[in-house]
Length: 363
Image (cartoon, rainbow, N blue to C red; front, top):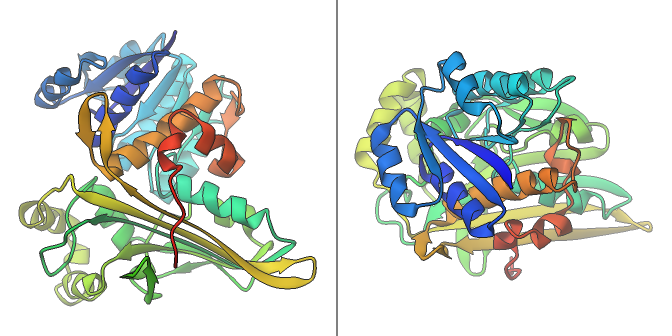
C-alpha cells in the first residue's frame, strides 16, 4: 500500500484524504500546523494526523521521509519549500497551485529528481488545461482556444453574487496578478479583470474576465501552434464591476491583506456551490472551419457518508486522479509532468477523475 502525505488540513486536504481512504489502496497521513483543523478532520477517520509547521523544513523532512508522494494543498507561497523537501526524501510531489512563479520554481526543483513533480493538479489550472488540450488535438490548425471556469454559489444573495468556496489567498492572487495568453501566435501578458464577456449555458447567463494562473502551462506548450488562447474566470453578471471598484477605485489591490480580511469577514462560505467548466476551440479539420466545446457543471455530492462541496470534489478529484495515474504507471514517474500530458479520457475513466464525468450541457 502506497504511503501518501497530504499537507494542509483545509477543505481540499480533508477531501483528498477521504477520497484516498475510500479507494482502499492508500495509507494517508494528513499534516497541518493548526491543531484545531486536525481535530476537525479526525471526525472523518481517513488519515493519520500529525501536527507540523511546514515552514520548518527539518521537521517537515522528518515527517515526509518514507512517503511515496506528497500532496500540497497549502497556500501557493509555501509550495516551493515543500517541493524541496519532496525532492530531498525522494517522494513524488503534487499541488493545486495557481501561481505562475511558484510553478516555474517547482519545475527547476524537479530536474534530476527521483520522483515525479506535478504542480497545478486542481481544477483551474489542472482539469481545464487537460480538457482544452484534448480539444486542441482534434484539429489540424487552431485559431482560437478558450478556457472558462467558475466556482459559484448555486443561490447568490449578495451584490457580488459570490460566496467563498476555497482559498481567499488564491482568489485574490488571481484577481491581482498579470495573466498569460496567446495573441496572434505569440505569448503575451494581459491585465486581470479585463477582457470582459458574457455568455449563456443552459439558460443561465454568466460573465467572464481575465484572471491569473488558470491557463497553466498551455501557453508554454502551444505558443506558435494556436493563433489565440486565453483563460477567464466565470462569475454571475455584476461581479467584475464591483471588483474594479474595490481593487482600482478604492485601491485595495495595493493592500491584499486588507482585501482578504474584508472578504473573509463579509462573504460567507457555502457548501451549496456549482462548478462551471467551459472549453471551446475553433479551427480547421480537413480544410473545413469548425468548432467544438467541452462543458460541465459539477455539483456537490456524498462521499464516504458525508456531503462535500463541488469545489472540494473537483479540486481533490484532479489532484488524486493525477497522483493515482503517476503511482500506477499511467504517467511518467520521474521529473516534471505537465497537466497536458494527461489524457482526458484516461482521467475521466480514473476512479477519482470520474467525478468530472457527468453530462454535457448546452450553450
